Length: 508
Image (tube, rainbow, N blue to C red):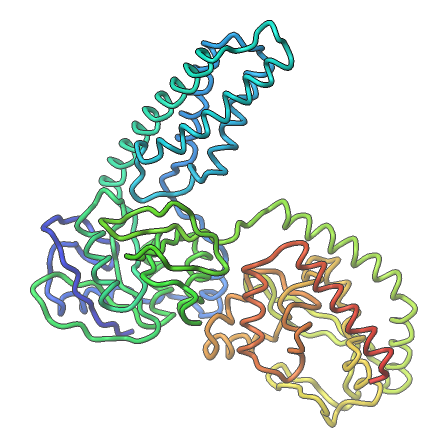
């Protein structure tokens, strides 16, 4: 593997670099090129690498939310002890305060947290909290109604305690960040990425140690200089290797990730490896689609920085998806039993024995499974694992052609759903040979396997079935995964059913 190196201006601090990266004292670019060779692919078959790369990896991070939540709750409890309000009302105050702070984004990750900058938000939420407590107390027990002086005292005490506690937590975490920085990659064009990397290297209190620059769009050869150098990663594979071998925990983008398809595919790569994502925008005006952006903006040595928060995993909804898929698949199997029996009989009478066709496909995280379908080729024909099947195949009988055009040949896959191999909605599974081939040609194709494969999907309801663009399919599949919701699944199922009935009514 070959990589260029990019200069990063340093301020004299030094630290221990990651494995294969060397120390972060200023070095000549040539030395950086030699050290860059330390980022090499792990030993073992490529298929195993691909599967392990797709499985989410837990990265050890310094948690900020729990300590802040603790000090906020303690501040609310201490404030409540000074008030004459009823105990049931006061007991709900910490829960309400935590919800108000979470809604305001006070528990989101920050690079440069400041309790004083958060003071107006803390004061506003405290006023809402204790005004609500006062109103509830007056309604429940008028004899204990809070006066204006008690209410003002509660708000001020809450703000002082919360601000002091948050300031202490921020200081302790800042010192921890200096002692134990986390590896980071800076993603973007050369000039901006080099400047951001220099800022990270020169200010250890941010807790990010740059280990490389990633520019997946246009590689460049940096000018020779007196400063140190970082390896430049210009290919998707190099970036993936660097993330794995350097245990990268953060990725800082210098332009919106959706600027191009290659950069967007890196968002999925970083997210699947448990990295925390940031957008460094000097003007603070960048708009990002498909991701939630935290406000107000943070700062990184003068650069406006916003956390890029991918849509949450929502495990409860994922379990609900699995449960709904199983129930609906069982109901569909029972309802479609007469149709499946007719299809099986037609295949048996027209094309001979062997009604069910079995083939190895690639599922969640690259795991293989056996897919079931009604056979659509004649008995003397064979659907090879390395041959792309197109419409009008000469080995297809009239019955097989009808089953394939109507998608009735997919009905046995309902049993795959019941078994857990597939879901009702998700990216369509493909054969291992083509998965390996398409993953090397189309950026983002491999990321389709972050979600269970399905019988139908967003690409299919948009007409991308059969011999259609693989790049378009991968784009639709990844968009479905990035914006997944139970409602979207139900919408896709409704669109699939509507298209099936249109086929039946139209007689196509």
